[in-house]
Image (cartoon, rainbow, N blue to C red; front, side, top):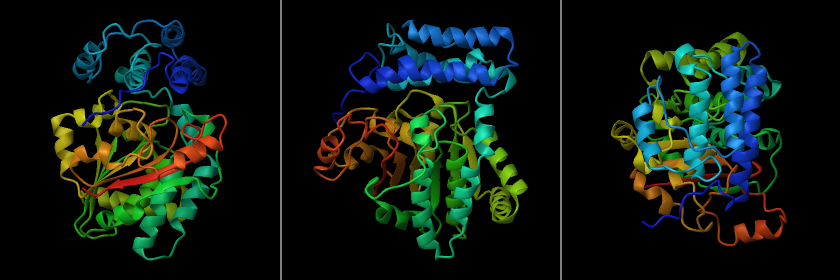
Length: 383
């Protein structure tokens, strides 16, 4: 299959250039400000990274200590000569977060440079109000799974690396641009289903994700593998400790939240819920390039759930497709049923109804509908 080329940071796409040149350095400096007790050397290393990006330095060679040096070196070798502002965006953006982890000495200390922001979100009223609403339904399981999948989609707006989307509280008619839940539900509800659930953000999104996972696990023979990052990425992406921190906060909250956490702990003890961190999810490879062990895991799924914008980009090659091209054109190589739930924070999209993108362009003179986090898609491929 002929795929469009990946987006680049060289100015050929306005949003990717702005993201790398302006947003990313701001994120790095904010992490420094939120960790005032960092050693001077770490602060200097991180602020230096922000300046190097703004100054268009060459992409740095991956260095140890880290468990992903070999994989990253192989990827880096394919991008020799690229610089921060003249590179494939997906590769460069993930390289930024690898550098943040390395320069903050995450692999030596396990101190998450984005923990203060995550804790602030964990304490927010928004998280607990939305979780309470998600747990309040008394509908039958099929309807609850349907509703929780949409709630999980809108939870994806709460991305601490992208305040434009995170600030959106309300949904309007027309915000859901594609809705394939009816195609995905039979696979999610299948007896003895094995759901490979690729998480995105911690905080509000993860809380609702876990409510959805709990509803799936009501099927007595269903099991769920929850895939998370091994290192901090995109500020709020979930790593293993975020899962357990969330469950502990739910227990402390009491009531329905505590009951949810206890059910999930029981499912974990019974090995029906597995938490699967992997360095691949923090790396720059697209899904057709997934390592063999991970491709084998995903290939056993009854259905794969891909949450969030970066996982969508990873699936479709972070490229500009014709927006009405069939979703299957980009997803069929997976070879298993899958569903993507993503609020739109980048330009990659396909599988929209014919004429919809043109209509949205005509009504949006700034043409920000692809990137402002207002709209979302639930898109499925049934295999």
